[in-house]
Image (cartoon, rainbow over all chains, first blue to last red; front, side):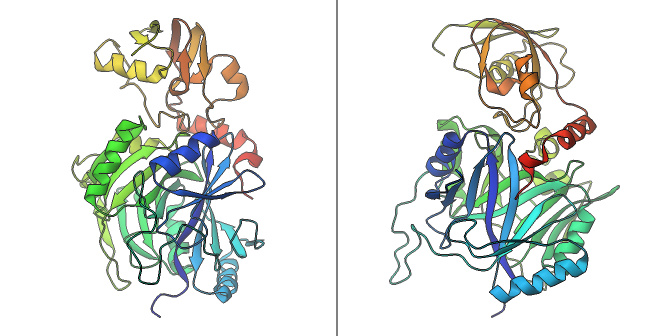
Length: 306
Length: 124
């Protein structure tokens, strides 16, 4: 097997101000399904295209934003080897017992230089709805809303992204697919654990631990257009799009959930192989890198986060 | 839009027309689009429009409104009670008067974020 260690993003825990509004947004509009609600009020969601128990956790809170992102690793023993590597790097590691979230095995967690909590887990139960695997139809349950196929990646904002880059590449074996270098230093990095153009990305920002967006994969450009129709029909707060990123080449829309957390739905993007070089952007073309058609950043890109 | 119409005064800049079931920020954006808001220091600050990012903060100086939940990272309960609110989270119940109080200085946001309860944003 070529892919070892960290496989992909597994789930993300997002803070919301109004739980019923958030559940309606992510299920009926984005197109996810509610798997269950925990005794502590957290709500667990997934796409019908995902096998594992859940990919989005909503937590009611007084402040919007993100609690953590968890990546799935290939084997339980990877949790022990990564714990040693993270500790050897100098970061504290804590343990979350199996069952703290329904259907998920033990996790390890640590906080990186940008102020974000990262977790790793190896085991998740399957939950319904999930894709059929014997003589499989394209879907058993007809897609609805924006027809999100999976929680794909997140973009975080925080300080010290040079250290974040070093940590992800040397400790977690990620590759840097693209980066933006400004005259005053590294501005942004797109990191991948597998063959997608990105599994997580970071932009330099003075406040630690911020969420720029969580992103859902759609089937194609036509689906992105349909998502735009839904955004207007249901008066969802739009940020920008439909447009395209030069970086990763994804066709995209940015919009906001009812608590102001930015969402993305996107399609496409190139395939990354671990032997490929890092693609780089500089200050002269950064606008085209972020928004390929507008060729300039919108005012919200660098300033509006939760 | 159906329903009663209220005048919303953005002090020093102009007037907008607001409606009971419409976010005040949306009324201000529409007024800006029609050129009714003069001498804005910048374009009207608009971010997530849903209470999370804090960039559309205003101080209501007159009038009644009701409010959706807004992120305590940007407006404390005490501040909200005193009329400091996010324009995207309030709906008029009468004519309103307000002034922009946008958190332009990021350092100020950092200071406030550090003061907020660790409990709320740290997990687990």
